[in-house]
Length: 396
Figure 1 (cartoon, one colour):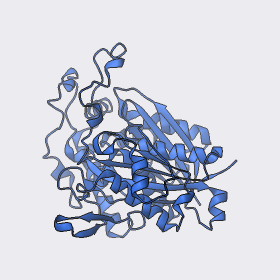
Figure 2: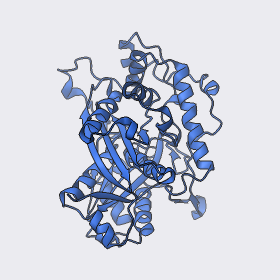
Figure 3: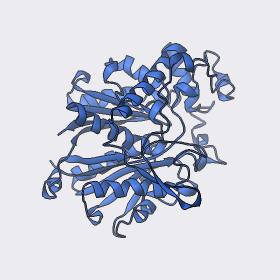
Figure 4: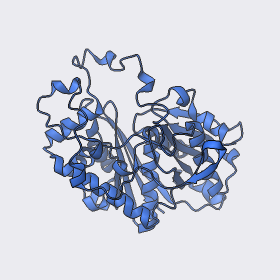
């Protein structure tokens, strides 16, 4: 069977997803084009050899509409012969893009493919693609009370698993501490590609550090933040909620892009490229659409069952920190080692640019395994509507 390998994986630094954020002045297609260009340049690869570019993007509206993958390919200066397609599996969009790309290589449909993702939450607000419509209306007969937002879902799972505010804030402070420690030691240098930002008057500068990491964050400091969803109209249906989800224990709105160069093992050898890792196995599953953040639990069990591996065989786990309850509940349910969970910090510190997060987690995981000598890595993330992807890679 053809093996799919990761030759390189890169990401932009994070930018606060609001006006004035360090990446807010960049059109999302331009942002994605910069990581695409960097990816092929780092491997000295002729972009004309790329069979396809598959991009994840959640809010496919405004500047992120009209198949942003194809627009970014052209903006990056790739030949017109290189196609691009955009996919949406909510927060897991670029993890799904990676799966489609790798599976295409394994099936023999591709020799070389780029999986990537982008989200400019400062320029295209979350939910912009659904403005004026109720995307949950078709399911009203099955869920007559409608579905809740992800914030309410986070509150519900915190209540169901009896997680208190102190646990959530302590976990969140740890995420910032780990990310800051990694940044200070140069641990992100191999995965971040500088982004060129044009300022007032046309002056250009390179941005190469994450804007969302707060090194001085403490659980005590987070304790003073008010809950975010107490006045949510849907939330009033759930009187058992103790209201503990705040901006401090949630992932911030973020701008960013990421990209992974995937090819067959044979093609990599032909081009004298040394792969970083190979894809070992994949899984995707649906889960309760109300408790939509619990999907990584069955997805993890599913991917492990397919491989015969035990969780103890995995050297690092990247579980997206959409909200602090997500990794904490996952850790408790699957019996994970907290020291291996998001060892470089997670989305609470590094940000969650929706469409880019899947490939960002994979990028961080690949470079962590390379730096530490670990063999296996597991990536999983919750997705809107109650879904989750899980991927296991093996360092080469």
